[in-house]
Image (tube, rainbow, N blue to C red):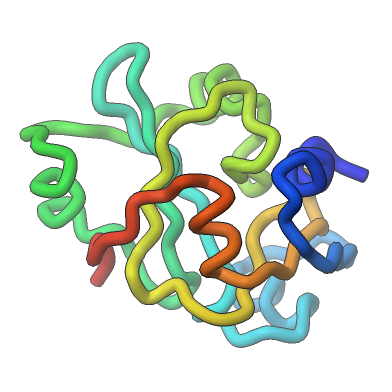
Length: 149
């Protein structure tokens, strides 16, 4: 059990945990979990200021649309933290970051295309949690918006 699955349990979120070997790409991870790449959700950490971050949930076949995200958040600048900072603010290493069980409950933004059954990182390499997107968004109190291209 990972911190992410423990957090999912605490939130009452129904999930199926999938474990697989290490992978080298999103496509490999999707194949190992038996899903389409669009259903594998990337969790991106963005920094608005030194102590202000957001988790952005992005479908695997899409990228953050920075202008859309800046407009949504009402900021002119934001950045992605380096790996050490991302670890400090989430407790997860790159490639395993998830809002579930993070060190801090940063606000979550979910792209509006995240629907149906999805797989989100389980907090460790080779671990995924398959969940209902609507239930995840509700459990995380995520803001849903068009933030990808």
